[in-house]
Length: 75
Image (cartoon, rainbow, N blue to C red; front, side):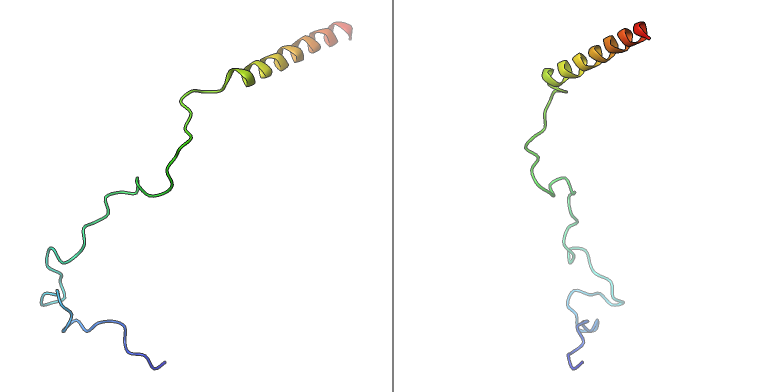
């Protein structure tokens, strides 16, 4: 490998204090948060299930119960 050393020499790096410390204001501010990261959520229903699926599931449960009662009466 014939490239130069990518690490800067601390003796000539601007912004460093003696001993290698960084004075206040030389570093960028920290990130605010991750709440803004990611895609915008556009679909967020405020209610629970719609009436249609509840009615269908209820009808199937009633049909199953009635079928079991009739089957138990026959056997």
